[in-house]
Length: 169
Image (cartoon, rainbow, N blue to C red; front, top):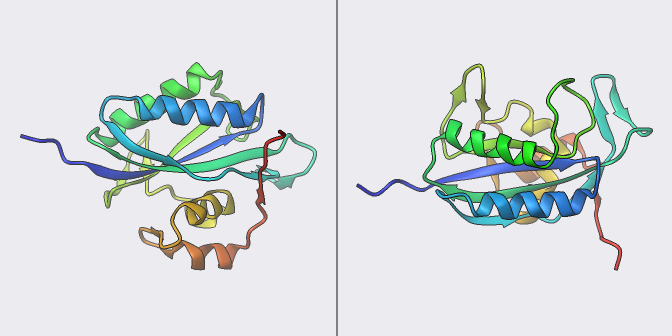
């Protein structure tokens, strides 16, 4: 029996260290995981750090991207790989809104809904996050967020505070 390929969307974020290098390396590592194929990384966008009290212009800025891919892994198996990649890049789990070297979120797993103590898919806040929607729209202008509608319309509704990121030559 051949395993079914499931389309997935993963969000990448970093606000500590060499953010763009970390995101590119993490995407490359994810693309080499057995059971993950066709990974395509969006352009990166820069944003002001978000805290429980709102945007914090004093905190290090985040660099964000998303990637589409296909997988034969189950959602929790894929989550295990994402958390291993985060740890390999110095991610320390603790305070929920803390600065981080790398944050990887499984936003979509095909048309599946997963809700347990480890994982909620679709990501419950993706429809409100311009730093997910803007890079996703750049990657796929026809993208649709399950349960919420067209990404272009969602981004128009929430507003886009992200900025294109261009690396120094």
